[in-house]
Structure formats: C-alpha cells, structure tokens
Image (cartoon, rainbow, N blue to C red; front, side):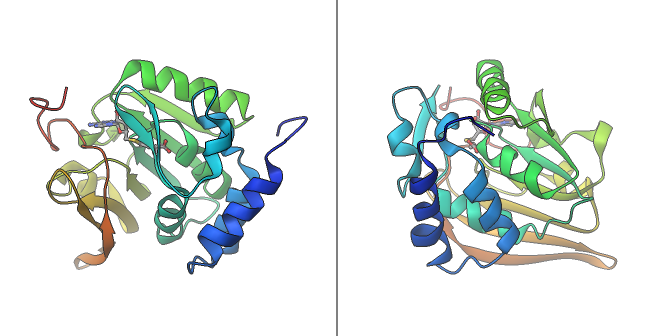
Length: 221
Ligand code: SAH
C-alpha cells in the first residue's frame, strides 16, 4: 500500500473502538478497513481527522461518511469475491476502495466530474486498482455492467430509484438511505425469485442523491 504509513495505529484503533465495539463482526470488512489508508481519501491537511468518529467534508458540499456507517453498509452487502458491485456516489473513493477489497468487479458512479477525478487520484495514490469510476447520473444505475450482486447508494433519496432495483441480480442486495432531505432510514433490499424483500436498518443522515430518479437539482445545486 504506502511505503510509510504513519496512521496504522489510528486505523487499528478506529476499527476496534468505533467499529468492532459497536457490533460489526465481518472479519473481511474489518480487515479491509484496517488496510485501506482512509487518510489518503480526505482533503490535504485533514489527514489526522480521517480516523475520527464522524463524516468529513471533501469539497463541493460533499462528505466522506463516518467510518462506522461505512462498515455497517459494507457488512450488510454480504460480498463474495466474485461479486459485481455498483456504488452510486463515489465521493472520495474510500467506500469504493473497501468494496474492491471484498468483491470482484466494482463500478462506482459519480455525478460531479471534479469529485470523480479526485476520487480516481485518491484511489491511485492508495494503490487501489480494482475500481472503475464513471461520471454520470447514478439514479439510472449503470446498465452496461448490470446485473449487479450488490448495489450501495451513498447519497439519500426519497425512494429507492427504480432502475437500481431492475439492475439487481437474483439474490442481489441493495443498501440505500431513504427518506426526507435531512435524515433518512438505511434500508436493505434483497431481490428474491418471487419479489423484493425490504429490511430497515436504522437512522442515518446523508447528502442528497440528485438525479432523474432521486431529488431534482433545484435547491441543492
Ligand atoms: N461513498 C463516498 C461518500 C459519498 S458522498 C465516500 O466513500 O467518500 C455522496 C456522493 O454522491 C457525492 O459525491 C455526490 O456528488 C454524489 N451524488 C449525488 N447524486 C448523485 C447521482 N445521481 N449519481 C452519482 N453520484 C451522485
């Protein structure tokens, strides 16, 4: 990963005190979070804050999510090494880097070109090669690579965008924050042969998902 990693101890503490202590048990998720250098995904000068128990601003009004929330969402995806995963909302690229540790194919789609470019740089600096960052409206999913075994949406919308449900493989899992603009419920959808099961996972606060099947741009841009 990085030649010298001055934050390894902070990262181990983050995993033990913020994540394992709160009930995340998936050893693959914990190992990935111990490995990926989160400080390379925050703006320059904020490296020390990267391992604190909170989200951080990454520019253009967007945030890198709190480590614990990232861990819960990743654990709930139940990833297997051959899985194809779509992330909607690349942001810093940190979540995508974790997904690449746990799954076979990772496509991450970001609406803002500048944010996407920075995410590509962050991923390269961290030595992560298994993520394809695409610029576009992720509320429409990404049909060329569908269907997906897992879809993770890291921005909030009033309802789960219909195209994402359509692009979920049988047995596929989708995690998304759903609800009003300020605070939402994290929900998990599982596509079964005979329908889609919905499981609520608790309250969260995410930045808005802006696009054709999310919030419309007005008032958010
Ligand atoms: N997963 C990120 C955090 C995401 S913040 C991380 O690990 O850092 C939410 C991101 O979703 C923002 O960058 C925002 O620009 C993006 N976004 C909002 N609406 C979107 C849309 N319709 N399609 C793709 N990305 C979108």
